[in-house]
Image 1 (cartoon, helix red, strand yellow):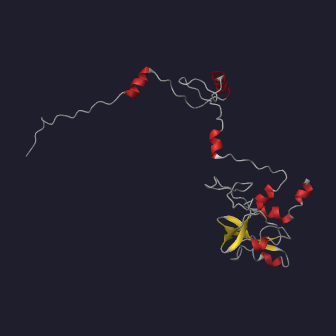
Image 2: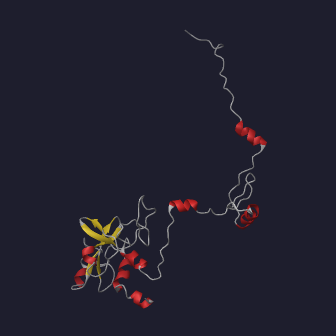
Image 3: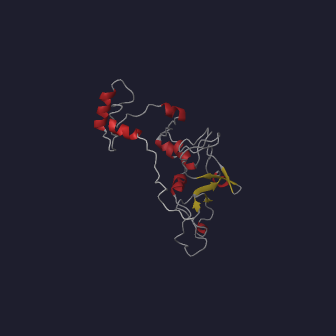
Length: 228
């Protein structure tokens, strides 16, 4: 598939729709209580519209954008008439099935998750590949390469980066290689550490750490007069 074929794979209004900011006040009908821009004309592709602006787009294909948890969604019953939403996970919101317009990355997937979005790694049901329409566009591109995530066990087994800071107690180290002192000094020169190093242990501070506090002595009470 060439670049032109890939560009023509999607309708011309889709990428423009995903870039728009909805639920802003209409600049033409700011005095109206229906001035919130949550409509979009697929034929004109001229930005978000309020319900009053929509009266100038009769017989045009128009869709309504809704919001869930500060993210834009659209009902499946509306969008599937104009776009193939296969492999995009659907959600039930207010008794209606919807899809999200753009990605919603997750900091870390929950425990036991077996399937995530190919693009942003959001947790998904096993039968889906993308969490939103935007992720489907990115993930379906011929230039897209999904990165492989390491499991926690493999992360723990992965080799550690070179140690930059050195100490006199353990000597220079470089991931446990045989030429540890040579590589350690070389790494320290290339990447100097700006944090203070731990001072070497001496006999004086060794004794101070081992010193125990003496038994506290209370002042004698026999010299104080006691009134009865």
